[in-house]
Length: 114
Image (cartoon, rainbow, N blue to C red):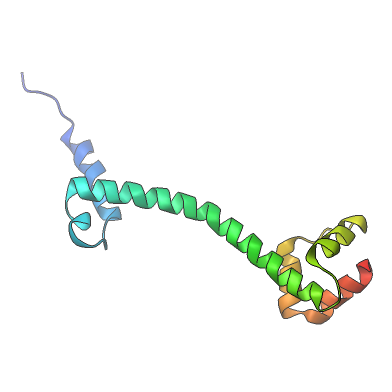
């Protein structure tokens, strides 16, 4: 009796990984063992990158808000404290957009909390 090996599923699994490795340099794109490791590593990087992206954008928003606040004589932490005290619930993304693209609206927010 021949051994049962489900070659269809095995080949499909390998094909999927090789398709993901398309565009890689050297043997990473066409040798199964190398490509498998490269794709696995790439998946780890992409997972980590999705978390880092959130961190980086939050840091960027904080820098922009801080720059906008300092033009009106406040620091970032003072401004955020005043926002909380006055129950103004604007998130950092919106505040950063106002500080960058709509300085008049941002000045109105600053004047409201002062």
